Amino acid sequence: MLKWIEATGRTEDAAVQNALAELGLDRDSVSVEVLERARNGFLGFGSSPAKVKVTYEVPDEEPVVKAAPAAEEAVIPAAPVEEETPAPAAEEASPAPQPVVNAKGVDLEDRIRAFLSGLLDHMGVEAEINISPKAENGILVTLEGPKLGALIGHRGETLDAIQQLTNYAVNRGRTHRVRVHIDAENYRAKREESLKRLANKVAAKVVKYRRNITLEPMNAYERHVIHETLQDYPDVITYSTGTEPNRRTVVAFSRGKHAY
Image (cartoon, rainbow, N blue to C red):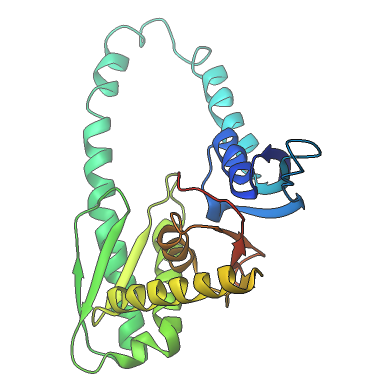
């Protein structure tokens, strides 16, 4: 479900920042439309703030998730018999969390390795699958082997597809999603440097010609690189627009933008 709010600020970038602060979201999670540009006026008269419309998506699954615990709580008090409540219930509750946590950790790595092994075998590609421990940003899977260019594809399109399929397979049936990042031949680092150069080159054109430039469709990680690279670039703001898989980053001119 899509929702939106309007926000104002001294500049377009300040208005966007005010909206993001209110929503608790980052730039790549929203679409931005500039409703009114900031006006400086003359001698303090006739000035007006910038006004933007920020659209964001709210998951539809939330009502279902909230409804499930309520049903369970309603059943639990009514079910126990007087003789079963004192001793057995307390003993069964304590050992349950440890096996579940351990099982999830093992199951997660097994799922990743099993899915990728089958996929690589189907593609006729031999590669060693190295899985790093789970970190704050997710799990990094590195594929190592000779001639992995077929796994990367044009501008990483094949690698992105493999990553997307792996995330879908691994998170299917899980209540808490985990992000799986897949790399081969250090492609991600090379692509990141290329995106940083592109971002600075485009930003220079935006400031020179004072016109917005919309980049080609990119995945969420690549859009994040553009946002992060230009977050302190003078007179430039960035935001994402459109829907996946054609979501794009817009590099826009914003007079008087300051670093935050």
